[in-house]
Image 1 (cartoon, helix red, strand yellow):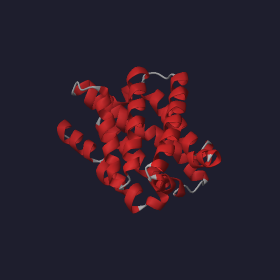
Image 2: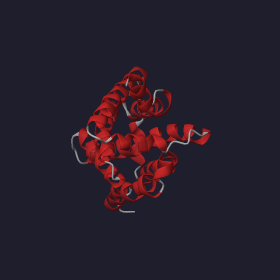
Image 3: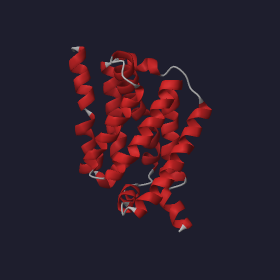
Image 4: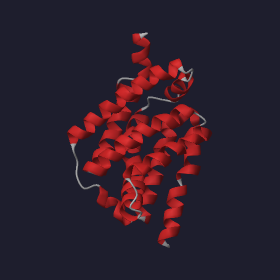
Amino acid sequence: MDARLGDLLLVLLPLPLFTVPFVLLSDLMVLAMGVVAPVLAASALALRRGVAESFRSLSLPASLAAALLLYLVFLAGGRLSRILGMWWQVERVYSSLTRSPLEVLLLAVIGFSEEVYWRGYLQEDLLASRLKAPWWFSSLPYSFVHLVSGMPLLVLAALPVGLVMGFLARRWGVSTSALAHTAWLYLVLYLVPVPVVLGAAA
């Protein structure tokens, strides 16, 4: 396949795929994303062999610190969403959780797979290496693709995630951002859910 055609397909692929968890199967959002994210990752690895090279190193302290930082950002975002009347969007995400063993496993799959595509392919391979664009540009499509959800809060929330994960991938490699993404997902969705913390503090 022509490289430019491959890039075009890869860049556009999230648009139809993200309608599955956020529109078609929004009641099973996390489970659906557990299928969509690996498709993105597998497509990137199949069409761009250089993506695997972005897994060059791992910084455990950086991963854990970033996961905690993002959790605190989302905690503050939860408070702000109440003030702005957007709390229903937070509830919609949490109400889609099944808390099944499969879903628990898929969180790790999602964290790893999203980093393969968004940071490994889009940021490191396409933008930084070949287009010589600033690494943080990757946070913009990562944020904007969430427009398909119809929830502005998800669009805003994706921006700091993209920036933090993008910085980790640029500085320490995609292994570091993948671990951070996964740890953050478990923190914010299962271990210390934002509604539980804010409800207890209310």
